[in-house]
Length: 181
Ligand code: DAT
Ligand code: MG
Image (cartoon, rainbow, N blue to C red; front, side, top):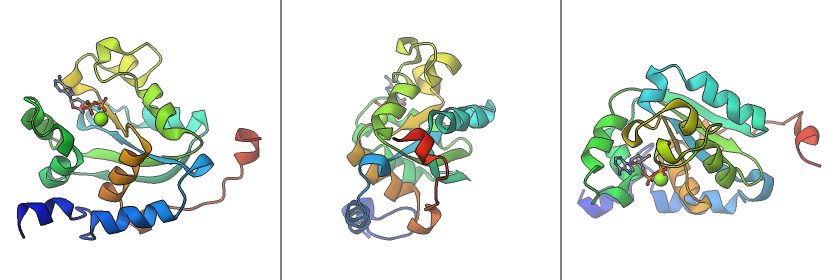
């Protein structure tokens, strides 16, 4: 398999990313069904921040549709961060992200991509306001404890990369009338 073909492969289950992304777009992940990919990075897991981070998204009113503790392969991480491959910190980023287990999650709700980014804070913890995850729990950009998709298109790409379709749960939200009018 050549490098180009390899980069298009879905690293989770061998399906083609392009094919899978088309299927996700068909399913209409817009409005209250918008989804984003949030991951607690290895430092977040080590520092026992998983519960705190999941709690924040739950309490906000977003719906958990996928969650798993996993060791990400370097191949998966290189694909996930492919836009950053020419950056001087890329090697270190892959080493950090593969240094221990990650908690990969998918959250659903109205404007979840944009709102989750606000809840995360800025890339550099020093620029992140108190009250955000990065503003409250970390100090260095290279150990910023959490990942969140930066756009709806990125979210679709990342969810396809990290989760198989059957790992995402559709469940009836008995609380939705209290969250949406
Ligand atoms: P974000 O995670 O806020 O979306 P990004 O996509 O620009 O930020 O970068 C991905 C990750 O790469 C980021 O969470 C931490 C790392 N990173 C970014 N800029 C860095 C830098 N200047 N030095 C070291 N690591 C950096
Ligand atoms: Mg990013």
